[in-house]
Image (cartoon, rainbow, N blue to C red; front, side):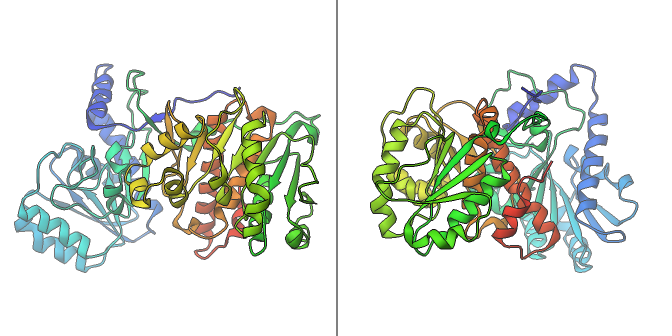
Length: 477
């Protein structure tokens, strides 16, 4: 098993203060941490701007403002203006003038996690003026005006383009009310704080690229395809054959040794003509699944009525009886029984919020209001299975234990087929015996790679399509 770094917990304000206190007790100074946070803020600001771009820094009087002021020496190639805000009413005109110059980026460091009271009218007017300018905003640690514990705002809050959390994400930043304010959430984790104390155990962990150093493990030089599993995919129906193709390509990108797609006669030729490596077999009630299989994926593209007739009973049987990993996605989620499964058998459900709502007989709004609870309840209802609840900051967890929050992703993933690619990638990884030993890490890796592939594509072109996602998948490191 490769060495694994300590996962990054998602903390509330009290836990963050405890972590800071434990760090100061070892002799580390606040000044040194502020210096390093300033470097991280500047590094982030440089990624989102070009040389000679104008950057406006709005710095409050506390440590949050100190963090942003510490970024100034590292922004020499940018045209910077730092507005130290102590009297928002008197300085509103100065803000308006600075915003009228249309800076490429505003660094918001007015209030940090220590804010615990409603903002007065002057501060609300100040923050609202910033929001009204519709400029790109980088918030330091937390968007000013936001409650870092609950995600509610103290009258109003900055609507950031991105938020750079210091040390660890704060739990309030992941709540539904906070999302319009947080934007893209990144973490400056290497800022001089000690490793988080083990007593800071939390329900949620933030997935980072560093979690996968040395993972998946290197393949032996003398390995052969039989060492990396055989995935059977049940997918594709009339009008939805592309989902089967995308799932198979996702599995190929996972490095699965063999892939066999079982599909219906009316889409066989459409699927087989697009797949060179995977085998494609006709499915009917008399044609059994490939006998030697190491994992199963059921669901992509099984939306046509005839698929429901053919595969409903089969899905229930396979879920109940198979000892190998079974991944269920898309339409097949509606066919999963609430029955016991063989002891130790791996089961994975991959719903988007609408599918999760159907599984729990709730509204999508109810699912989104408490995504963590939705994962717990789905897992409990379906035999303590693993759940990958897709969407912004995809969750990976089960009925108990720590839940992972995916850090990678891009809004362009909101297109048909991206979930099929992910389902194939997950199942392709779980078909490999070496990756079945740590299901939690394998699932985290799959979801992170999927999001990171989208980020890489968006950095190259804004209008990439899902076929390109299947091509890019697995390249991130």
